[in-house]
Length: 153
Ligand code: ZN
Image 1 (tube, rainbow, N blue to C red):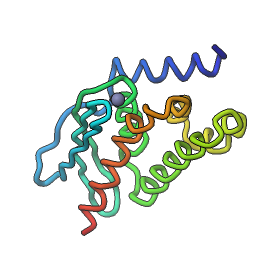
Image 2: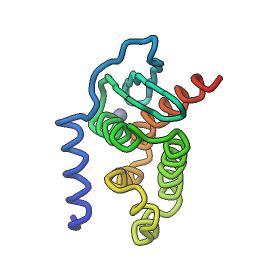
Image 3: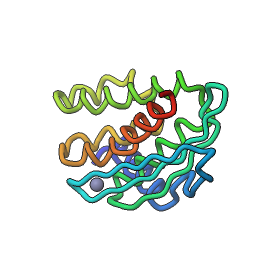
């Protein structure tokens, strides 16, 4: 295993053992949205507090495999306190990373422009070597996107 893979593994385990932004927000006023990945049994519930175009606060609960839970923790840390424009572009960048790896895992690991943008989120890049786990990694992100969509409607 390379040093980079070791680092990624440590980041994922760290977020699994010590999940960030764990908990609930009163809803309303916060918006509550739930996601489920039937392939693996992963569940996530996200609470979103949006004010003046900023994701002022985010909390989440859930259970499931280490990938789904560490991905939701990493996501919450990446988007909390950010303007919604930034949140949407982070979601897009993450999804592109997952799609890119579906087709060319080895090459994408060398091409690190996206990985730098993503910071710790890049730890999840290795997940896509195991296609069945992609749904685990993207669950929290799809649920977040759905929640933001519901808020804007
Ligand atoms: Zn899973």
